[in-house]
Length: 262
Image 1: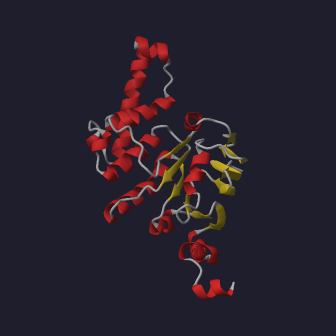
Image 2 (image 1 turned 180 degrees about the vertical axis):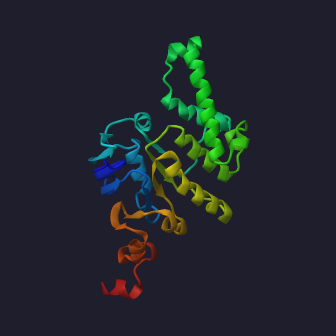
Image 3 (image 1 turned 90 degrees about the vertical axis):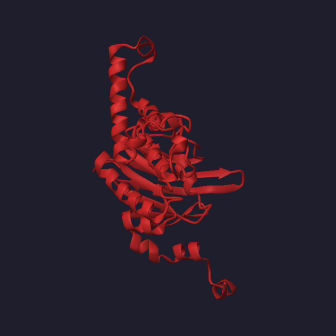
């Protein structure tokens, strides 16, 4: 059997007395498109932070294509093949759009310090290849015409696209997208939805996304995991998750008459 692209087993994390994530497990096959949803404060971004080494779990294990990630720094995890975007955009604001992507692509660079200082033929060839690939990624994301602009000057939707291009520049096996259509208008959301669907086949990548736009999640995610207060309350295909009573309760609350009766 093919090893999962990403697997988490029994992840738990507490901040003081608050259990932020409790016994979280997931298994993403290669080229999966999996959604993680839940009300505000459910622990979704905390899960992403655990997977990418921002936090270390109190319990549990994380594997990327069978490689254990526990204890590794975020930079080492990115090098292993797990990349992400952020809920709050974190671009290098003063750098150009192209240099944002080139910087990320440097994760795969082979030229060491001495070759870069001496500007050897290998270093120059690699720099040219990085620039070409970065421009290709910007073209795929539809923002190649903005390559020379400062990242901070981009419209909001294009900043989201740049974040994805930057993550893809690290050549990930798994791409984590944290609210990729947050703040977008309807037209931008439709375009981003089509783009996300195309990425996994084009780049041979599994995608795990957090999103509050239920239309997007239900349309494109093959499987969905639902968190509430750090606990997984449902997991399955979109149709089953939509009809799950625990999910309905988490989003809509308990009717007054039921609460009074309990």
